[in-house]
Length: 197
Image 1 (cartoon, helix red, strand yellow):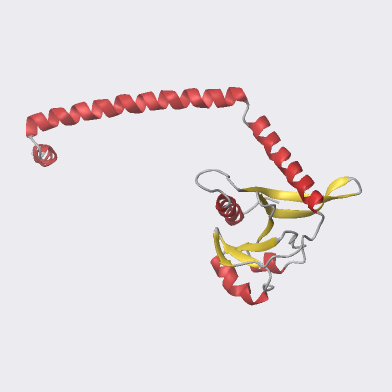
Image 2 (tube, one colour):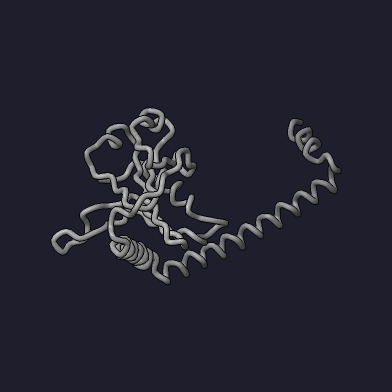
């Protein structure tokens, strides 16, 4: 099932929350981390967003965009040391009394309710393995979707656009200088008067 724009927006906001000063420094996050195996196949539970930090802390996030989504019977993957809902402000107002005291809440990237530390709900090695699989999946998508040739072509096009922008800017500045010489410092007012004639 395709994700809604609101789901994508909340995913982006909570993902950006893990960035510090323009890059991941101490907390690393992945979307859609599938933990465990079922009959030899990965996937008996999916975490919407999972982070692991340099202190060995796991945080699990459940992204919910509607009341029916929040109240659905689908499993909530609260497996981390700290577990959170990621909600819209309106949804939070509707469900805040239904959220267990140990579960935190983010509205987008802003924490409005702190989570209480819990024991991991699954073995840490299971989480690490799931995290590695999700990271490998994302790396593979990037590799297949952004071949070196595509990246080189995009960089070449960006250089051409930058050169064109620089040329147009120089032409604009030269025209502006001519107008100042002809009409003085108030060249815009003088130009408007001349155009009105």
